Image (cartoon, rainbow, N blue to C red):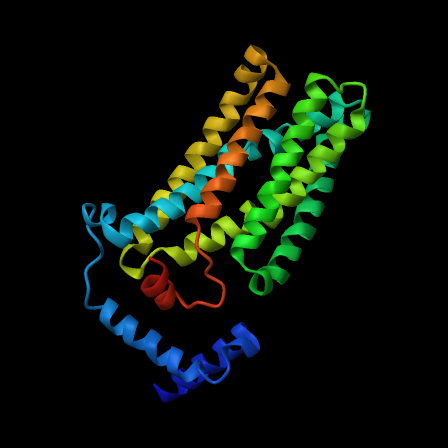
Length: 255
């Protein structure tokens, strides 16, 4: 047991770096104590999930993954080739080429988010990234509404959207739902969050084409921009900062 404890302390120091200081042994002991108590506790019931700190965690987690999708991510990414093609780039008809380019760009931006998230924090990346999403959606809406003779606007809007999404909602959304749920409800909480995520993804995907035919692509992107503003309000007032906090500290101090 002592060997495992020493290994845990070493891993925690490597993970947290200098920020953890000399508190690593204490934090490991707290984690072990929490786990020993958790093994004796039953999983949270359905009724308990909608009360107190469990409801707050559910509201944060589900709200985050819901906005992750209804700000238009499925539509923008799934229809990236048609967006570029309508902007006059014939190469966009090659969906494989477009997918590779966007995939590499997403990889670079996600890697950037991974490198800076523990230094800048979750909230700054979310607020900055979603602000960029809003601007990009306004650019796409403007292009389809009255700037159709400026294809560069569509390209800038698309790349800005992809880059800002991968700095914010993309990685940070999944990171935060892994942190925010207390141990007793982590299994059910994550299951509900993932269900909402994929349900919202399907809804936005299937609704885009009918909405585009009904009100026009420009109006659809403007609608997504309004939702992005609402997500900014949600992040600012609801989403806590969890940088540098252990799972036990998040449950004790944030929820």
